[in-house]
Image (cartoon, rainbow, N blue to C red):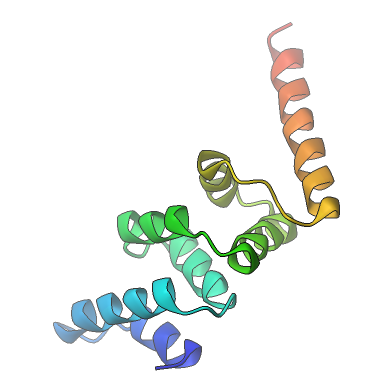
Length: 118
């Protein structure tokens, strides 16, 4: 299997067999060393596709390249779902520019809360 095939299987809507295809795709995406797997898993997270399993996989990521890709994806779209997951994971971005962007975003969110609360 490759990333394209895993993506096709994960987003398959074929009745009955789609469950098995999705599970095999998730297994592949969790185990592959390719950082591009994170793009597919994040799209699944946004689509609400197997959310529990996708979250579990994303929270278990240890590979630095994959973690950095998750931070890059967050930086590109500032998804609240992905941001919350990354905060829960608690592993900072490896890239200094991304770490600074995250710090700015977190501080901005804190300031908004403080302003609302008076």
